[in-house]
Image (cartoon, rainbow, N blue to C red):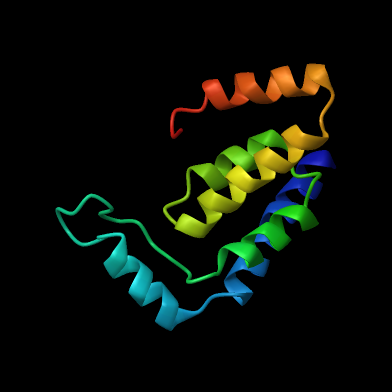
Length: 113
């Protein structure tokens, strides 16, 4: 049952981000971050969501488990990764000392960071 709930939250986050997508802004961001073949951001994809909106989405889902945050961090979509990092920041700010240690361990063991 817990696995279903966390997958549901993950799907909801992705849906919320998709709903805030702005294709025109995404095109501009893809050029700015040099996502073309052979460029430093090659393969990175953008939805064109403003950072304040990503903060709003991250604050909406404080219960997302670390394993699902890790899935967002592994996404090719830039806004998924930034929202995952924002979720980690929010979790860390509200955590007690033992949870903070666990979060730091999680971050140190996450290869995409």
